[in-house]
Length: 250
Length: 56
Image 1 (cartoon, chains in turn brown, purple):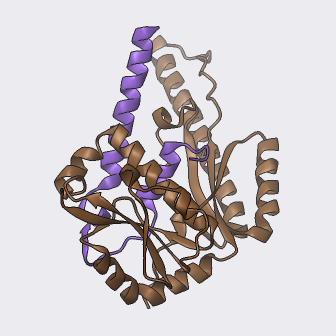
Image 2 (cartoon, chains in turn green, purple):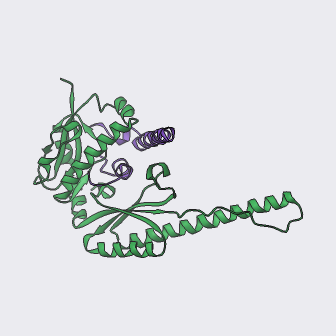
């Protein structure tokens, strides 16, 4: 039998999670709970698969990454459906359940503070894309020399691009600030690579907002208004509050 | 999984989530997960695109 370790998915306020029996962990392993309030959701993984060396290799393997991230995310969703939950970062592995229990006792106050801040709120993802750039058509200039005309054209194109970039950046900031206004907390991620979004237009805002459930209609209205104004916006969620669980150190 | 894009999940699983230091065997602090994984994803997307082009 290979050496086992304990993989930690999430920490939540209560062990009463109705959806959990229907979900399996990484590699189809059954889930367990450690502790009571707060309570950690864990499963056993092979230590060989999650050693630092193995992890470096595995994270380069798209199939491994997809399978592991999907399993982790499914567990988090099931736990989060039952109440405020703090998802743990991918690939957090402990020697055994006892070490997880110790950590829970040490961090209990921080988890309680974080979990109570999450009650009644959900995370939404907002992504803004820059509209297709019109192709620059060379402008006729009255320059006396072709060389000079060429340089002027280059400069004009560069200025146009800079203007568009500025306008886009302003729009992204505009969306971000109106979302942040209604959100309890906001967090920005780096815009995703075009090859990953499958959308030809570049992403100019990739952000997450923690929003009171009572304010979700306002969020939807803002998004609708921005779309009516011609912006290409993707709204994702609700997510488990992945982006808003930094533990406050007491 | 509900209909979500892997890349959106990875933003959160690799850039968000509780980071716990202490008695862990392995954690984000030990490996630059985001950089490695996104590089892998992009590389695999490129391969897919090339395969599609080759098939076309």
